[in-house]
Length: 314
Image (cartoon, rainbow, N blue to C red; front, side, top):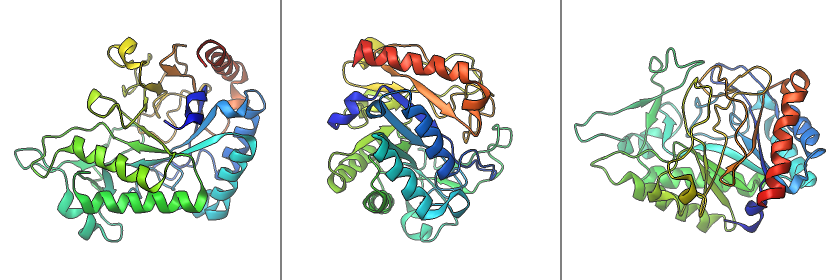
């Protein structure tokens, strides 16, 4: 954990572009929203989380680059530089073990490393608006991070983008996936990925979607669980044990305070929009295009949770 990460008291989820092409926040709109929040909470306590920053969510996993429709490279640079000028830290989202089968080079670094179960079944990864056609698309391949060419390809992309744009943290989607894959131990693959990323980006924060004790020492920050369309959040087992070493924040599918939209996530609408204030749970504010304007009172409740968290636990 870098020292600055121990001061996080609010995660702001700035939803970019959905798989369907629906844009919630461009880079410029995300920065304006972040400025508004930073005017109400000491910015050094804010971590800006960017899902869907690379264009269509999930569609270009395996090939990460700024999206022109969101503002291009200049727009992404302005967002990250602007966040740093405010005093905030920034965390884009990457897929630890998913890639689209039609991105350049997949036949070299992806196809041989496709994850299998012991029977030889090869799973497919895809998303949809609300999961109603979740497995119809089939564009995504599930890869094993124990397969070195895929792991090295991902490290090169993340480290290269970090060197270019200077973000502070990396979020690894589906990081806690475990499979009894004959190709190699998936847990060893995630641990190796963390080691290689830290070697390229010293002082960097790594966060992940899910948690289990086998990776708790390399993925210190995780999300609160994944339960689609459930009106309450899902806590980790044994939170008293968990909070000694780890922290969690709102899952990417946490509903926004105005519309209950899960943003770029495939959950559609999720009733849960606010998390309980506990030492182990960092308050999280999910923003789509007009959340602040449409529900200022609810947004303020989350900001007050963050103030309480900062005062009580930091």
